Length: 72
Image (cartoon, rainbow, N blue to C red):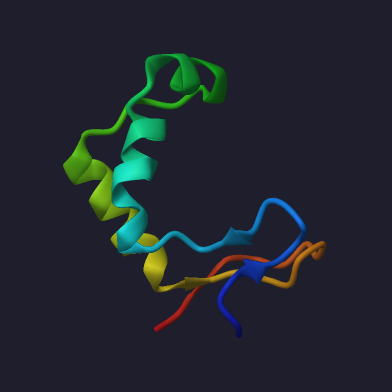
């Protein structure tokens, strides 16, 4: 199964990568954002672990109702 990579005029939707850590952490450590999402804020370590865990997952085709599968 292919890695998630949906390209549109804007925005581009793709899987997180470790190079996204700084931006992802800014988003997940913002209390206002987590209040809307109903999730907890993440430390930088939790953010990094989240990205690492999701690097091995593959997602179904865009627009489909596929399941998330572990890439192992």
